[in-house]
Image (cartoon, rainbow, N blue to C red):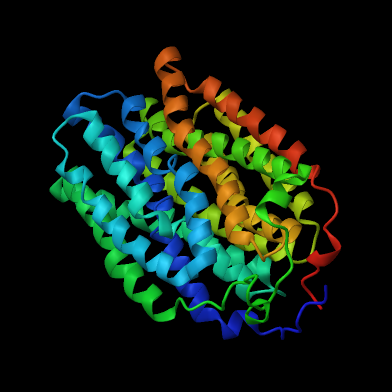
Length: 410
């Protein structure tokens, strides 16, 4: 199918949309809880006497419930468009972040609060922002996705120091209040003003969309590529989500200062941004599964460094390698889903793929923390991460050639 001609100034013309979507990613229900979890592990568990695995199980309720919410969000976006879904999610997430600050010491209250982040903030998950990119960008789709999803790295760099400063001055409860203010007062005005993507392809009015080819969700699920992509996503996020939230506790357990540990996470965040932009640039020019394989091999080296000797130097190298791979996964998932299955039903397909990501992200932090509590060591977790990344590389290479319709340059 021939695609409409697009000029090469996509990025310049639609810079406001990219800005709004990037800020939306920073303030999303998957990114804010994930990258700030490590800050709350010590203070909250000390306050209530919980174990680390009990506390980190909270991510199963925030990120993990994406298994339920992401297909629903995909359907809502296909029905109503990304803009109203995003605005509702921003308000809902801010309300949900107030709930942990009000807990009185029972785990179910804390889990309920993180569940609220998943449901009330569901409209902020990446499917919303990447749908806008795939509907509006064709020549520079990979780079546009990289720019938008670099919001995850920006969150890792910018938000934890701010929340840490608030917590140092006012305590962990006010840390959650500060998190509640970020989506509403930073993302809200920017998204309301600039997030106005083009219509998504619809079966009743194909002419209203900029690009209309694509498999339905049921057709995509009948093809092996769907399950290969889903399996690789699941394994990558088992590794990433198990390693990253536990990296600060692992470092501080060895006597490394919290300040040095936080700086290590800043390196991770900077590497995420570099990874997003590099991968986005490369997939517009080279075979995306090959690019993915190279990116996902790097954290295998990082895991072996951590497994061999958990020094600050090794941790910083590993953080950079993990961050570069983390900068690849979300935009690669979006790019590969749109490329192999088409943009027409992208929100629904991406929503189901995102469910694999969400389940892994919810399970892994508590799983790796439990491994630590049983063995009093993170070495098994580091080895598990290396194995998961390795198998993910093999799977992603099985995707094969692009379908003929996937050419984005007319």
